[in-house]
Amino acid sequence: MALAACGADEIPDDEERAATPCEELRDHLVDLRVGSATGTADELAQHRAAMRRALGDDFVQSCEDNLGPTQIACSTAAADLAAVSACTAP
Figure 1 (cartoon, rainbow, N blue to C red):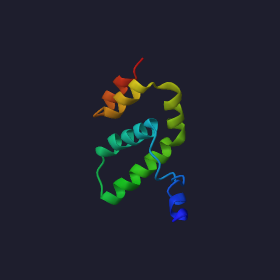
Figure 2 (cartoon, rainbow, N blue to C red; figure 1 turned 45 degrees about the horizontal axis):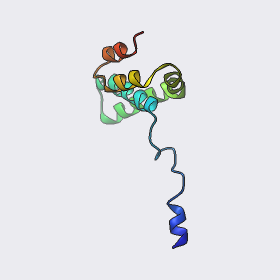
Figure 3 (cartoon, rainbow, N blue to C red; figure 1 turned 60 degrees about the horizontal axis):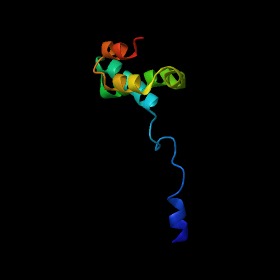
């Protein structure tokens, strides 16, 4: 029983941890770009994964360094790329 209780305190894998706001924004931007693409579900999933990798950690770091919480929230709620741009305009 003691071992079972200790297991609950383990640190989750990267896949299980909650995404940061900038990671969520990156994923939202990928979804907006892929949303207008055509192809099979598998092709779209591959395209989505490739775009996510292309933006990668550099996007997340830049987001964390340059965007405030209000800009991130606005961008994450945006329905299209033009609205995202409006959220981050100086």
